[in-house]
Image 1 (cartoon, rainbow, N blue to C red):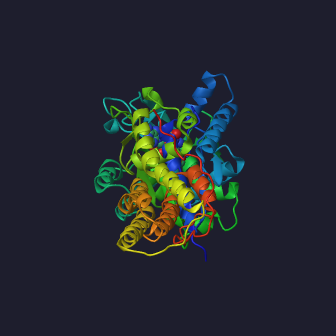
Image 2: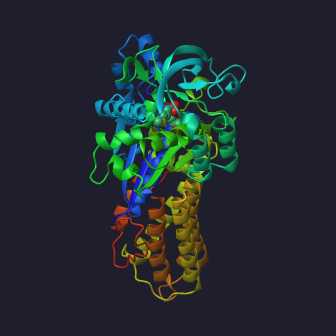
Image 3: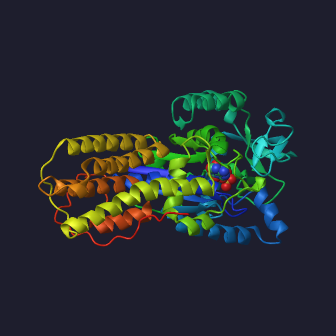
Length: 502
Ligand code: MSP
């Protein structure tokens, strides 16, 4: 049976254009997905838009538009961004999709039948921006602890999900390693949210923009209960052979599941979502919580703070490979990381131009000058080659381990160490000073081989550049056989892979 990998991003609120913070989550998902494909996996990648809820309804009213028309125009901008960034998803779920709505209402009824849902009254606080119920003690200075906005008092009839019965279950799951977060953050989640877990209000009656339940038409489903199920409904919406809700989420499935989320929504994915899955009879996911993109002064980039950066502009200015590379490499996975044009330019010039692009163009120039563009076969081999390949093979092993444990920023750094080893090999062997008898053929042959390896490791990040190099080498990139020999191949002209930015 083939190896299978399922990856998801959160589905984004279409109440505004996306910024570089959103692009970060999706780039990480695309990165691991492409890696898995290179490693021979069959994969399924879902992203989408979270279209219901009070926030969207209010925004549409403000603009005098029908909510559906309003979200549709924004969703188009999401899809455009993903194309520009080279995101290769299999499925884009809109929660207004009829199939999604049908499955979500059916699951609601299942939960009612199983006695996990009961009717009551909700009295409490609500943050419309985060679509979150809050208690008095969870507030910071009387405001939402997440976005800092005013909260509102809500008092309405509501159906409740009996999550309080699942405290021990969640604690055990949180501590079992399924949620990839530091131990401190896990303890924080347990102390702040699990110990005092209250049943969750899962329907609203004070507005209309949502999925009505079959049991009681004036109730619409709470937007998080609706949105989380995109990870299930996707398989019915965008069908792919060998992928169904049961094949992925059935308890006996062994498909690798990775759900990427920003740290502020871990609570929903690490507490409520596991309970919902358990109630519905499904298996547990692995959830990776990543940090935030912050400004130079350490402030979270967000619309409410007015400090967002438009990813489209960045892509137009610097090219998508550079942006992808920066996001993956320079934001340490799991931690907050800075983004600014200055930092980006430093990284492009320092690493992509000076180290990688230079290695490839120097090798190409020498191969042309000394061998008329035809890669020589390896001649005599010595200590330099042994050292080089010991190092490269060690780094390949490290890279795979890091990828398989989702240490994304560490993995690109490992790939760059292969580039550095090749540059060092040039410095040590000084090919411009030696003849073929002294091993010039060996040096060029090994450099080309090494470029194949480093480019393959960088390919999930540098999607366009790696394609250019792969064409130049006349060889598909694959992790399955990294030991390729290029002797006898003619290497053509090659454009500069990355241009220095002033
Ligand atoms: N709609 C919900 C998710 C529902 S999933 C069933 C939501 N949407 S969102 O549009 O507000 O944000 C989605 C993702 O963008 C989150 O993972 C969040 O962490 C990420 N980011 C938003 N701003 C960010 C940064 N400044 N930095 C990194 N990621 C950030 O929440």
